[in-house]
Amino acid sequence: MLRHEWRRDGTGAEAVAKSLVIALAGVAAAAALALLGLVVVKGIGAISWTFLSGMPVNRGIEGGIFPSIFGTFYLLVLTALVCLPVGIMAGVYLTEYARPGRLLSLVNGAILNLAGVPSIVYGLFGLAFFVLFLRLGSSLLAAALTLACMTLPVVVTATRESLLAVPQSYREAAWALGATRWQTIRSVVLPAARSGIITGAVLGLSRAAGETAPILATGVAFVLPRLPSGPTDRFMALPYTIYIFATQIPDMPKERMWGAALVLLAMVTSANLLATFLRSKTQRRQA
Amino acid sequence: MTAELTTALATEGFCLSFDGRPVLRDISLTLRRNTVTALIGPSGSGKSTLLRGFNRMNDHLAGVGISGRITFGGREIYDPSTDLAQLRTKIGMVFQRPNPFPKSIFDNVAYGPWVHGVRQRRQLASIVERSLRRAALWEEVRDRLGQSALELSGGQQQRLCIARSLAVDPEVLLMDEPCSALDPAATQKIEDLIEELKREVTVVIATHNLQQAARISEQTAFLLAGELIEFGPTSEVFTAPRDPRTNEYITGRFG
Image (cartoon, rainbow over the protein chains, first blue to last red):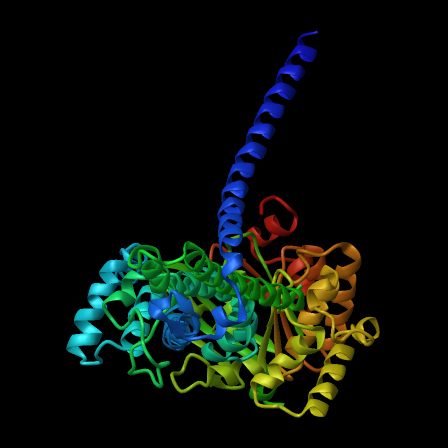
């Protein structure tokens, strides 16, 4: 009798916990879907060939946002070119070469803290260091270096954690065959850690793609007559264009603002999907 | 033959410590070529550490202190001029848990030669086939060399790891409890393999399994708390041990 009672109680708690978990997961999913749905519904009407491929006309009220798409893409490529090699190599050094000790934990702690620095602070740093001190001026290069600084801790941390997850037995097997440290890292450890590093890098870069504060003072412009012809030119970028469309131009059709947001969202989402695809591909090869 | 030619590995007063705590004390033993030597002793007796001393795998750990000598072919392996990569192609190692790389069967075996500069596909293929045959795995995997090594059974993975070590033509094979994660049938296969291999290589095997040591080895070294208690022909160590502690261990009174 008693046992029966107890079991019913247990099942009751089980059912409550289960429905609570499902409900909360539903809330999280609903929030994401609502955001996505809102942007799609409000912005889809603005999407047209002219909108995607044309130059802005009349402060952006007419024409297209191509320079902003191009600028964001260009900016991200430069950022990735700087922060991926530096970040991955730094992660490799910290995990595979550096001797454990107080200095190493200090450096690791500093990198973790850097990841939490507000993006506007990076913007100010970029203005002071890259634009003024290094005399790069307001430019794609200065903005990309600033974004690279911001993304670096994410890439380093993702690299470190993926490398730490690689079983030590893989390294020992390679060493025991006479592989040098670097040969082991290049041909065994990095391939085994690839999926985690790719995921971390894409997450960091897609966050950088949406940032306004770090590029505000380092090179972004509202409207430019031409596309940037090189890394020393100023540029337009989607997040800033969205901000301007939303707040600075009173007679801007709201649809165009949502349209620009939809384009940015699509870019970031497709980057994330690409990362997922690459990851599943490398994992299948490893499985 | 001179001692130089019949001796594969020799230690003289070899001591090793971690962070100042001694793990091996004054180990002196001589391993003859093309024989199987078993290292036995309870957990923590230092047999794995001694095994890893022969190919300097302990170098990768922090806080290791070493004194005494280990010679291989008459040359001091802890000499600063020793080429570690070369030493480790001559002295291969098989680990306690099968640890194939998350790569194909082919790439696992080809890894060693590839690292040492062999790039021609045909040459690699012939090394892979020869090594898999030597490890008695060829017939089981010849049709699926491109498959991931992680899809093999535990026993097959361990033989793959042996094939991977053999691919660089070692003179010595160090085996660190290679059967402790395997079932009896897989263990049997590895033991047969060791019997086969000793024609060409010198095998040093650390094992918890006393029957295994008695079955496959010519010489046995008994370690206890980092000291070499007894070293001699396996038949003598198991039937007429000179030290009472050896007797206690092999009759199962501790360990």
